Every structure is written in structure tokens, then in C-alpha cells.
Image 1 (cartoon, rainbow, N blue to C red):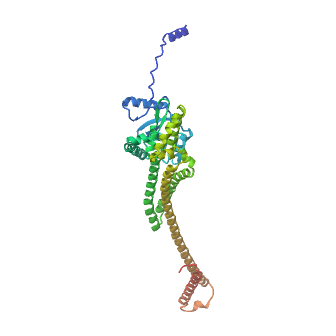
Image 2: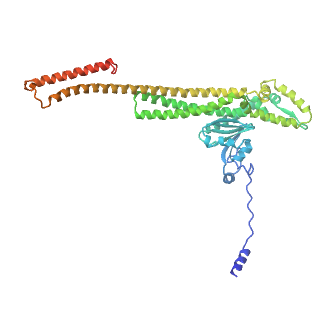
Image 3: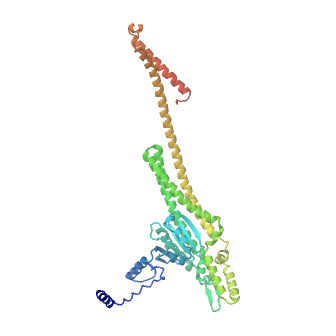
Amino acid sequence: MGKGTLTFRGSSSRKPPKPAAPALPSPSGAASPSPLVPSGSNSGGGGGTAVSVKGKKKAGGARLWMSFDRVGKSELVELDKNTIIRRAGIPARDLRILGPLFSHSSNILAREKAMVVNLEFIKAIVTAEEVMILDPLCQEVLPFVDQLRQQLPHKNESRIHGAGPSDVQDNELQVSTPGQWLPVPEAVEGLQCELPFEFQVLEIALEVVCTFLDTNVADLEREAYPVLDELARNVSTKNLEHVRSLKSNLTRLLARVQKVRDEIEHLLDDNEDMAHLYLTRKWIQNQQSEALLGGEGSNGISSALPHLHRISSNRSGSLVTSNFFDDNDVEDLEMLLEAYFMQLDGTRNKILSVREYIDDTEDYVNIQLDNQRNELIQLQLILTIASFAIAAETLVAGVFGMNLQCTLYQVNGIFEIFVGSATTVAILLFLLVLGYARWKKLIGT
């Protein structure tokens, strides 16, 4: 009866479930969390914060990224690994390179649609349209972010204002389709500047890294020379500890410079790898291929080709025919990498010069210590000779100190004569052995 009552009450007191509250739509899909500080949006502060917190709870591996497009427009977002893989088109193993385990490694990897840049503290993924920077609020990464904000809009603005209407008309890459002309505005932007977008970002990254390393080397030089001079004047435990710490810092800094230098040298030795880094060229070729495949017949192709010849009449056109359509042309990237390779080589030479100065100082200190050790050995040898002479005199005194019958005991004043004679013999023995040691060059003059 009790069981039935309980069962009846439980079934009667059951309430229908309430409808779940609709989830807030994410602007970039379910997998990507909402941006923390989206540029160009005027959304309220409270709603934006709530969305970012929910997105942070859902995405366990989300990290902070900052994206820059071609015109310098920035956006601060939190993205997880899956979103980054889909957005940049890179394999999952490339994200390991950007992880904390490779914090001071240097890698520049070319992928089909992106370039993975891991130079010291700069960890970025560069595509033909944007660059995404990992942990942009770090103290070391802030100079790189500031340089992107300053240089990318400036280059784009000068490119836009520097070109007249006729230049824009000449530099438009148009491909005919059945119903309309298909312009490629990104190609126009690539034609007007000397370097593609991805190389502009790479140049800024190399400049920031080289400046950072060069500054560290300069600080190390200012610290090293006074410490080494003090050690040369006074060999003490404190000065030796300073030099040991200085040498450790120098070794670590040399390894960091060497990693960046070796990565650039590896790219310079392989033209195929450098050709794969031309993302804008591959992007333009893909756009043109899609547009040409969508056309009807050969009319569109034949109408597009004269326009390309007309473009190639100026310098921008030569960039189209040489840089964008010639897959083997890597001259621009090669010149860029060679410039920073020479700068890194100079920084490395500065470190090696400091290391040579440290080695010279250590050799000088070792010579000083050896000289002092030799002086101690010479002093010990002189004292040993003196001890031998005194021991000979003591032997004679010990013989006469025995209770033996001797007529010399009865002579008046024999004690002074005997002691003086024994001391004189000991001194002559000391000088004789000392002269022999100097003759054998065991003791310096």
C-alpha cells in the first residue's frame, strides 16, 4: 500500500520539462568561439562578454589569436585547434610547432594555403589574405603587432592613393565569364606593391626578431667587457662567477641566433621551398583557373590574354608575368632572406667576437694563475734547500750533543768557534745547492 502511494504521488507530481533556452548563435559557427574584441562591430559590452565566456567554457583548447587582413584591419578572437585547421588549411601537427614546447625554435613552413612562421616568440599563420598571431598580448609579441598596425595600412594606403584611374584599369586582372567580367581585386593589390602580403608579414617578423636579437647582443656586449676587464685585473671568486653566468647567457643567445640563421639558410638553399611560400601567386592562379574553367569556349581566354600583355608593359605587369605566373621565380624572396641572413650573420659574428674575448681573458687568467703557481713552487724549492742546509748543521750539533768523551770539550771558547763554523758550512751548502738549481733553470733569476 505504501509503495503504491509513493508511486502514485511520484507520477502525479511530475511536471512537464521546461523548454530549454535557445543558445546564443555564434558568429563563426558552432566550433569557433565569438571574438573578444571584434573590429568594426558596435555590439554591447555585456552581451559580448557573455558570449565570450560561454565560448571559452565550451572550447577547452581555445587560445587567443589576433588576425590582420591585407588592409591592416585587426580582430582579437579565441579559436580552438579545429577552427584554426579549417580556417588556415594546415595539418594538425603544425599547431604543435606553435606550442610551448617549441618556444625558442625557428621554423618557416610552407603549406598549400598558408605559411607557418615560428621565429623565437613570434608564432603566426600567414595566408594570402590574413595573418593570425598567437598570444598577441605577450610583452615580446607586442612590437610585432605594433609594426603590423603601422606598416600594413600605410603600405595599402600609399598603394591606393599612388595609383591613378588609368593604372587601376591597366592593372585589373579580368577574366571573361558567360555573363560578366570577373575582377580579381587582390591581384590588383599584389601588383601595386613590391612584395606580396605574406612576404610583407614575413619581412616584419624577421625585422622584429633580428632587432630583438641584436639588442640582446648589444646589451650583452656592454655587460661583458667591464666584467672581463675586472677579472683580468683581479682574479676572485666573485668575478669568476660573473664570467660563468655571462658565458652561459652568451651560449644560449648564440644558439637562438644560430637557429634563425640556419632556418633562413635552409630556405635559401632550396628554391622549391621558397616557391611554395608564394601564397599570393598560388591564390591568384587558383582564382584564374576557377574562372577560366567556368567560362564557355576560348573567347574568354583569348580576350583575357591581350589584357595581360597590356599589363606587362609597365613594372607592375612585369611582376605579373614574372612573379605571379612563373613558379620558378623566387628572386624577391631570395633577396629578402639574404638581407636578413646577412644581418643575422653579423649578429652571430658579434657574439663570436665576445666569446673570443672571453676565451682570451680566460687564457690570460690561466697564465696568471700558472705564473703564481710557478712562483709558489720556486719558493717551496728555496725553502726546501734552506731546510736541507739547516738539517746538516743540526746533524753535527746532534752528534756533539751526545755524552761522548772528547777533548774539544776542555778547550775554552770552542763553542763560539764551532757554532760559527757549522753555520758557515750550512750557508755555503745552501748557496751551493741554490746555484745548482739556478744552473739547471729550476729557479728563475
